[in-house]
Length: 181
Image (cartoon, rainbow, N blue to C red; front, top):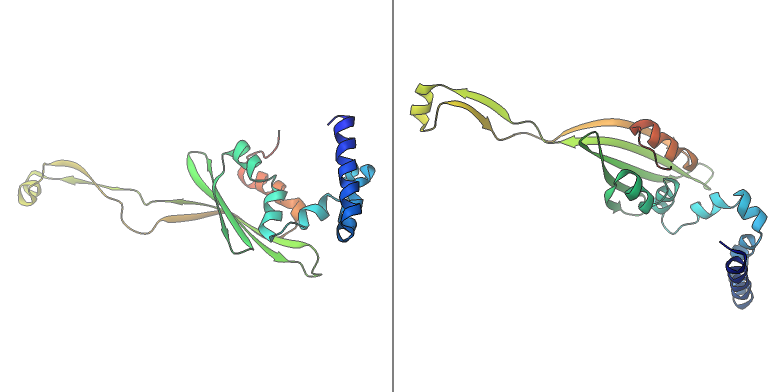
């Protein structure tokens, strides 16, 4: 961002803080460029989102980054404390579910991350003899039966009591997929 654009943004923030005194507490720390550059307020900004799952998504880089870097799709929100999404990995569909809860001190959030695969059961192949084929009115040889049974769920990674800073690292460690360049 060039100097004129940042100066214009700074001027607009000052005008807003002057016009709405109730927002001053939140706007004034943003104006101190040294604090913003050093990331002192980054954690507070991520934790201050409207819904808890939004902070979890922010710690992973946001929905846009997840879509671009790993092909994430089908984002689903359950209440205000859970988000899940699907992503392809090693020719399988993987699902990541993040549950959010308040920490012990009531300040920061604690996260629970679960990564799993869900697949349909495999089709069964049977050999049909000539006698059985005549009896049932089908042709002899190999036949594939449709898959039956419940989907097979395999949990790849499950971790409780994660803090926000650990979400991206643990996701990358569990899947081998990078979330940043």
